[in-house]
Length: 192
Picture: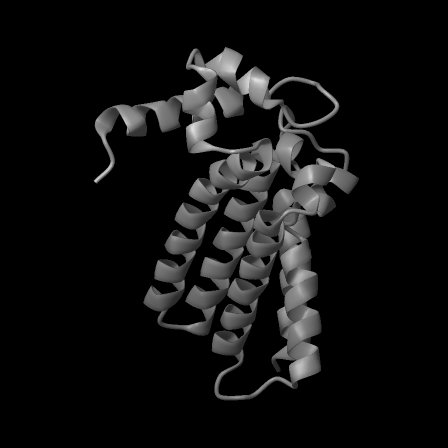
């Protein structure tokens, strides 16, 4: 069991990372920035996170885990194709909102190339694929069509897509629902 001061220190480091990423700087904050923002000693910060990449991954993973848990539960609870589609739309909207909120982190080269970014993107595609299979059942979608459709739908919520739209975390994402609704129309072309 983790000591309570270790848990509190980890939380302070995560909060410091969050504050540090809310500034306009060319890259991720440095570990020195995190030490300064957290008010903790250098050794304490490095004991929890050996580098900024592992800190960024841990920070993002907390939110992604909660997001995907909620989606898995919603997809399990869905009793019809309409409920599955609604759960998928809700997932994509939440994934996009989370991505937009953390866009300043996610569009940095250090993150785009990270295992955490790839894992989140892959998990998003798996979620879309699972929902498509449930919506199509008992019909089986051709594998290449399933993969292509899953990829196109998933991209509507990906950070790179949001970044290309010139949306920042300070702005309202006024096109989120329209972009996702448009992507979901692909289901109608695949499942008929």
